[in-house]
Length: 262
Image (cartoon, rainbow, N blue to C red; front, top):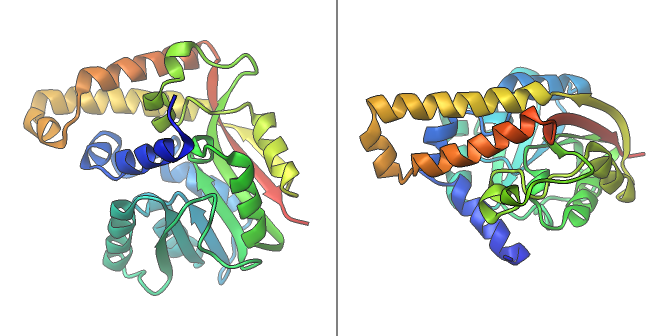
């Protein structure tokens, strides 16, 4: 078993690699920017509000929210290389004055108390080893009446097959996913009241299919790029096959959850 710090370091290192961008494309979570927009709409984001994007990755969510909803965004990610890419993406999009990115741990956010109208966290809460502490951090940085919006992998109460509880599965947002009610309980214990949930199970199936199709195409047309990026196609496809089977069996799904700070 890996320690929490090893798991976090592994996740940060994995998602900062060129290989992840090559396999996943622009958006690193099921549902892509369409589901990000749905989350923003449910949160009721308005011009001039301040948003914290936790586990902000390459900055796609933060830049989309800033440009489409006219909000200021502070992104936080544990991986230094990811933060550098996100900063470059914001500058290229002309958003350097609106979007800021910080290297930091979701369990110790480098953000001030009571400063944000909304916190968003997409397909990452399930990877945090200490979810209770992360939830408390979400509550700390929110203003009164502020909302946290999460989209994440869900699992049934019976849990996952053993082959989907490995470190690799943890990095792939599966190993420590919880039932939707489990996420709501974690937020409730931090003082955040769930006000809306939605099922988006189709999003995870679509993403798995897209990864498999992308890898198959790249294997035929750009095998050298995969090799240079260190992508072990067979290993990735083995994990996507396991995840796809679990999704068909109803063992894993995807959901949207919004909770409010009183």
